[in-house]
Image (cartoon, rainbow, N blue to C red; front, side, top):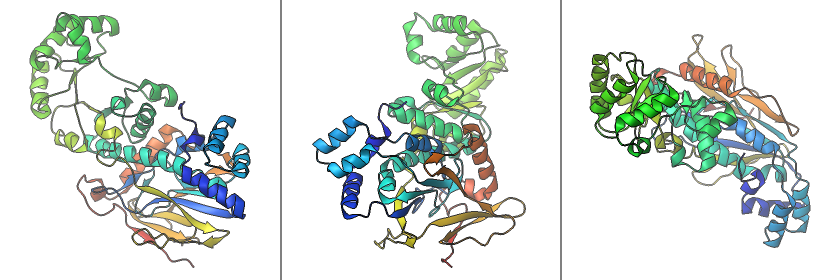
Amino acid sequence: MSTLRPALLTDHYELTMVSAALRDGTADRRCVFEVFSRRLPAGRRYGVVAGTGRLIDLIRDFRFDPDEIEFLRRTGVVDDRAARWLADYRFTGDVDGYAEGELFFPGSPILTVSGTFAECVVLETLVLSVLNHDCAVAAAAARMVTAARGRALIEMGSRRAHEEAAVAAARAAYLAGFRFTSNLAAGQRYGIPTAGTAAHAFTLLHDDEQAAFASQVATLGKDTTLLVDTYDISQGIRNAIAVAGPELRAVRIDSGDLAVIAQQSRELLDSLGATETKIIVSGDLDEYAIASLAAEPVDMYGAGTAVVTGSGAPTAGLVYKLVEVDGRPVVKRSEHKATIGGRKVAVRRHKPTGTATEEIIVPQGVPDRQPNDRLLQRSFVVDGEPVALPTLDESREHLRQCLISIPWEGLKLSGGDPAVPVTVVPAS
């Protein structure tokens, strides 16, 4: 697990508010906070909810130990009253929201946290840290999956991320439809299939390329992937087949003009009798590069930096806002940052054919349900106790179905309007 305990993800200003609210008597007011995005990242037509499963586990384990509390007292972050409150902290409220793998759009209330002001406000940074990261990675990964048109993808970005973010990114990419990850911690923690090849260093270690290939095949058998672009790609392919024979599972190419090289490599492999040997390409691939290779004889893509950094959108832009106090809607009126008061309920409206047409959000009320509407929120935590959540594979299938349901224009990589328009119905 993470070396950073969940409680230490609390920001200074959150504990400042807790201390003041405890002193003035407002800490126990019943409140509702909502997580939503005011807009999607530039060029995006949908967001993907990811990280909820991780978040609920972190909320369950959210505690302040004596050393942490002493640090907060010693540095003046909290007073004695707040320190005593932190020592007994347990989240006792409710968490509801969109399922992992659900799509979201501007204004979608993807998470609702209800409880006392104090117990909810200390979770703000934790909630946003998890969701902003995982949703960003999942949205980028989903676009890559669409661009790959059914071809497999392997997530290979661990070296481009913080060690814990790398594991979370592998999970989010798998949720979005990636087939494998190279991150073994993600494989152990979440049951994600792992895959990988030797690096150029292994080839350079040996006196020649054939010796390196022979060692790898002797250890792993012919059901392995040989990296063939350390020196000359065409000669690398010849050496690979000379060592492993035409039963070699795959070759990987990590450099060059991949469109041209993939064509040439396929022709060469076929001429050597390796007609079933697959071609895997990698090297700074994003959704646009993957889409540009759609007509080429590529069997699998390896994506690294782009996927773990959200492919140009490293955060989903989510915010955590107070919308209700003691049953009374509250609103923020700041220019360009105004909020809509009251707890929201949302449904996704569909045609009889299953195509999504609209998202309806109703503050402080119940939506007028139509036959093909789907209620979007579900319970994650009730009275402080987590409820059973879908498995990662179930959430992965949920996202696949959601992407099928949106109009085809919503899957375009070019910029445009959100795939599904959002309508906020005035409170009744």
